[in-house]
Image (cartoon, rainbow, N blue to C red; front, side):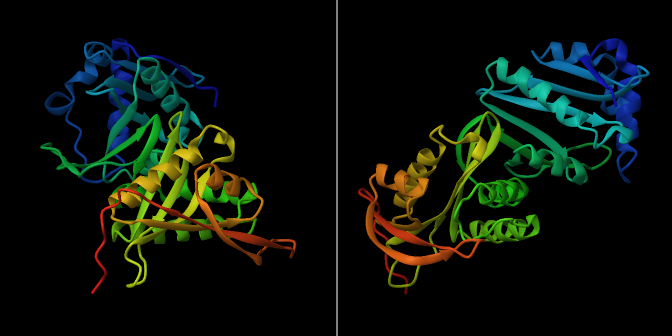
Length: 339
């Protein structure tokens, strides 16, 4: 739609006010009272500059303000993404992603290591947008003492690193994890699915895993690179009663665009550490013979227990052998047998 993104100005006050009022007006129960609750909209550029942050506006081809976004520093290397609003007619055009990219790039250049934001629980479309861009739910719901009786979800993502996804984070990561699984299967990953993998199947799989993580039967890990959720691995703790000391590594996936950057090795090492912390002293896994995974596990010090020929089928009808690996963990706390 030929929109232009530029720094926001105090002189944009009327455009900002109209945009925010229109967006809030789409949701029953949201009360827009400029002077009582958002007087900073009258001089928003000054407001964010005073906090060490920055503000951007988006204009359409006729010069009408149709989008906005801001960012400001918080504590401990975190930067908050704020005031993400877009005119309804310009949604789905890619403008929101461009605005978000501009704010994230500014925060990154300023030294951010983590990005966070807050979103009203009613803004479901916005939640899908943030989750698509690798943000996950973080922390408890925040109540606001405002006229709209607002409740807000917290979202966050590290620019790089690995995190354990709790129940809320795992549920919100499902869309991005589904995309990751589809892309990895399309690139030839042997992870119990055949290409082409339907997105509905991938979503269903990760919803099941998110539930298992919430029930603490799984530990779900995610890795970010350059602000993108680019890898994952699952640690299965749900073992038989006579194997309380064991856990299983499943679904070690790295975005094909982010491979050869050490993410797989880092995810595996973190999963091993989580297993030890959970009191598990023995880990097992299986992988297709002669693929990159086999080399990774050998390089990481895992031992081969054996091979099973014709274990898995391919889309063309051919079959591959699988290799069973195990690893003993030192320093793991003892796990008592289930009773």
